[in-house]
Image (spheres, rainbow, N blue to C red):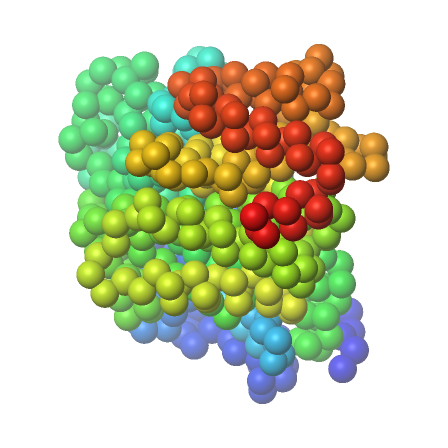
Length: 494
């Protein structure tokens, strides 16, 4: 079916083909209970789908107001279609389409920051959730502390009621609630940070204390920051994806999201002001999320990053393409094997089955998850995904060769030149610093590896560890000598 010029919206849901799932509740009766910071594809394919299920089960006061911290693109795409959008779940067997109605409104924080603070301070809002990526927390990943010199932090401390950063918005809204005698909302981080709830609590209270020690203490004493683990692969949406979804709907959806069948959300059950019936929507409510979070960071995210950097250098555009190369599939498995021994899981957790499921998910031919997309913001991701496991293995005198190759792949990538000498569009908060170090060191592993290992914000004291320096330098030398494909083949065959 070719789609016409009709736009997806509330008025034409009944015109959708019967196979298209749509909101199973009266959307006009839903009221906001959540403000979500970071209105990107991942949130719309993960948490918003869960909330959609909660609304269908009768939790009508938990609709979402989404906030894009910078770009108006998502708001501009979704507002004309009443904030309805499609989630396309792609598997080898075919694609299922579902229209999500949980998002009620969206705002662009930069346009009217005071209005977003006011909305977050509304007593009807009981949860503020976040997917702003690692770099959105204005912190130092190696320590987990607020970066007081971050430009957005400096701005927000001087413009308390017109913030730019996620910590700035949270603190400004909590300060207003405190002044009005209202209970704080729960801060629900859904990003891949180590101990994400505790980390965000530390960042937010440190920021608040810079403004007022009393405010910092009130937030620390009264606000819940449950840790979470989220898992679903969500590639960026392409124009071809938009066309395919619009054809399936018979009408235009300006910004659908693509994803896989698998989804997992593990949440510590600590909420200041109530929550939806998450368990009814398949969320795992636990007392301690840390084992699950480390499992995901060190098995899924670490192997994903290894495939992204080395796969990109080898010329593979997507993770599924990379996994077609048996040596790269073995690389992913070896990263998981190295990391698995650093984990202590609750009784009954089947790590072998989890690893097998990850390899199958990575190989899903229907998901076009670009290596370049996963390679973004590596300076923020390496400490949680790779370096923690390396540190644990070194502490136990275990080899780190496969992880070292992944780190070397990142180093080769951030030089911003690929193996054919073509420019790489490196997206990272520290990209300029890495490029300068690469220019000074040149394509010489013995110079480049120590230079990058000396970047304190990424490696901290681990960068001076002799065994790590030797392993990474050796791996980087092999990448320069043989190229990524041959290097991976050699490492996994050793």
